[in-house]
Image (cartoon, rainbow, N blue to C red; front, side, top):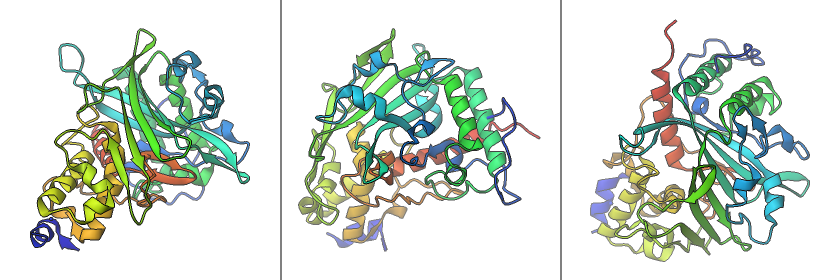
Length: 390
């Protein structure tokens, strides 16, 4: 592909607990270096009637249930025309992310960096004899003390040592858990640590993505947990709103989507409509691709500065536009790179425009955003610096 600038010109561009059992046939010589799959965990979907292998919202550890029913009842209905109580029972944790520096408030009100564990839960349901996911999400944020987060990082080093180089390579359905199974020692140790540090006592934020019955409109919103209750959070770049939507009536070959509403003075929305994207002038295309790249770049934006809907659509929309216009964005100043990490997006959904998942499943297909991949590299590098010297 041609470089970004050239094309645009041409367009007139875990340490506590018992040691983990050795992995089955784990290859020797795996370097002790955290990689993407060592800090971000997409769990394989269980077999039918084995949902209990994944954590539920009612699972109760040292900090209380992951998401008590009374708090869940304050979240909007996740799937239109499916009872809320049924969905609560179906919700299972499908992915886990570790973050040593989620953006907090400016001092002296709160630390700039908040140490967190983040869990993504989706409703699981049976279809055609297998378990699949409904197209909705609850995203749970647990803020940890220094001592609790130290236990989490120690667990990561433990798991890394046991995994060898099996976790090397691009972010994917977790290679060790997929190999051992959800009832294997790796996932068992990860779950035990999560139940020790995650629960009502450490839950500070709940975000959601809800879907309509037809599967063509998704709503995003978030709450802060204050005094044991949910308090509406305002949407970055749209501070007068508590809920934002994405619509998509097109297909992978011809998109017809929109942000409702789009952030003001931002051209990203152009990439969601095939008719506009294909005929965009050079300046508009440049602005739209730049917006997507900045959303994907952990140093250019954060959950405090970008609305959720834009973040969830940016990766696939950008790739679709680059393919059509034969653009290679790797030379763009806002393109994120992390030497030593493979940042390839390998998810099974590819560029399906209705797959809005940032780190989970669309049906049974894995779905990541490039932002999640890039953040995982930043986190892996930061946590590796905390590894105790031998």
